[in-house]
Length: 98
Image (cartoon, rainbow, N blue to C red; front, side, top):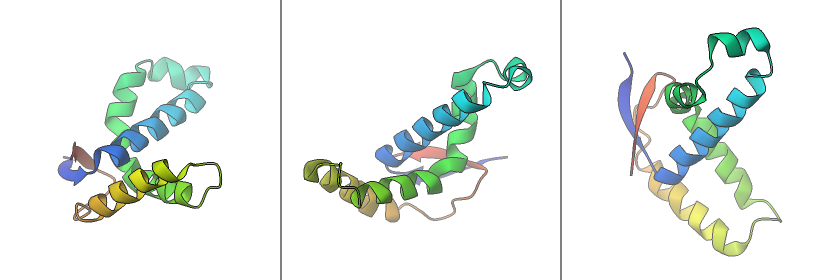
């Protein structure tokens, strides 16, 4: 059973985007797609396991030369707020956004 954890809404949104990208890549395999035709269900089931990767992706954007300073400020604030919500995260998490 998955337990609920908390994450900043930007981190969760990023995790969902990563899950959607993973789905699109895996769906290129016909047999995998046949067993997993529902993209929304896949994203809902897997994004909780991608919270750490989402944080890493957002942190990487802070070092990017192509991300504008205003966006970097929003990302930095989200990561700071998210860091106070990190307790108990693992791969079987159900995520609550803040």
